Length: 202
Image 1 (cartoon, rainbow, N blue to C red):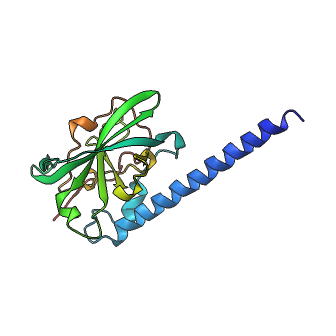
Image 2 (image 1 turned 120 degrees about the vertical axis):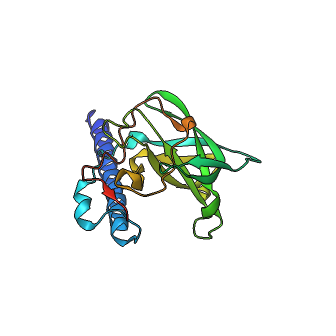
Image 3 (image 1 turned 180 degrees about the vertical axis):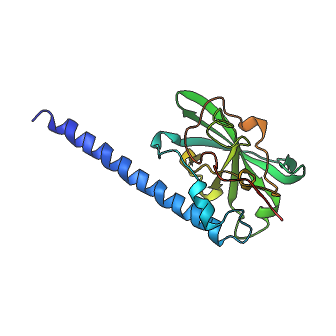
């Protein structure tokens, strides 16, 4: 019977992996449906077959320490169409991933903050060593909620990293991830390269 505790642990871990994978699969299905319902979307239903993702991996879900920033000035975050959008730095987050200690910055959009629906939205754009190889060369984004910060911590799930619209089409104002969010490691989680033909927005 000495093997029973080990077996129970294995079953428990396997059940967690399956339930986590199911959770991420549900998230991705909702993500795909948003392309169909969003009038500004660059993709149609037939294009969704060209979306690809890494397998769900809970090691890329981290609990980060969050340090809120005070009296931050608004700055202009460049976009890939040559313009810019107004943001301010909201918090620094510190965490470990694949054995590396990392720091990133969370941002708030000035425009979105004025909208009651998005007043708690936090923006986490980043680049990493997969860009231009297995993921979009311009980096990826993660959406977070300021209400999710509890006891000075927030969960960041890189399995939910997604491509900006610029990965699929020209003609969108996609923010360029600031250099301070350039991760010196490969984040093999979230959305991969789009394999469809790049569109041109009218």
